[in-house]
Each structure stands twice: as C-alpha cells, then as structure tokens.
Length: 103
Image (cartoon, rainbow, N blue to C red; front, side, top):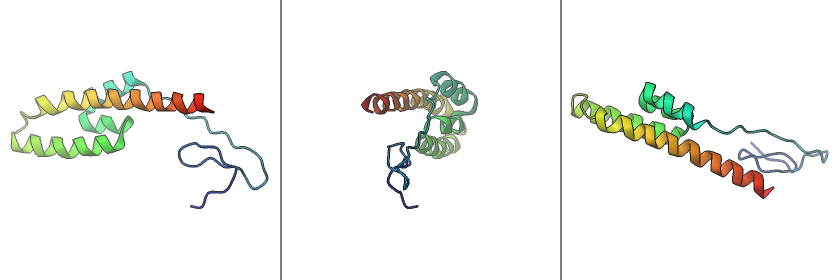
C-alpha cells in the first residue's frame, strides 16, 4: 500500500492528502483491567487483546511447557501471561499518550 502525503500511516502519523485536507483517526487506549481479565480467563489467547506478538509467543510456550509437564507447567506460564498482558496494555497506553502530547 502506497502512502500519500496528508494521510495517516499505519502508526497514526500525520501525512497530507492529495487535496490538502487532513485525516484524523481516533485511537482508543487499551484497558489494563480488560487485559488482565481476558488473560486470567483465556491465558495466552487473552493476551491477543494487548499484544499479538506476546500472545503468539506465550501460546507456543504454554503448549510446549504444558505438554512436557502434563499441564503442571501452566501454574508458571499462566501468571506470566497475566503480568505480560498488563504490562503490554500499560506500555501501549503510555506510547499513545506520548504521541498525542508530541503533536
């Protein structure tokens, strides 16, 4: 996809349209509480709300560790998923606020 001047790119940065008008995209922050609840209920699948890469990594890790330890490894991986999801949502929100203040 080619980006034109005046448009916003995938990361929400301002660019110019061909006709010179500005496009505004509102991006909502991620709720840390929702990230925690989804991850507590669904484990690594719940992480996809806050971090797709982290969710994929932990899904593979949880499957491998769970298989090798006959499920007992979930006692370790599940809380790691919850903490990672909360930190990822918080980090996303901080980045979003920093970008908003920079404009």
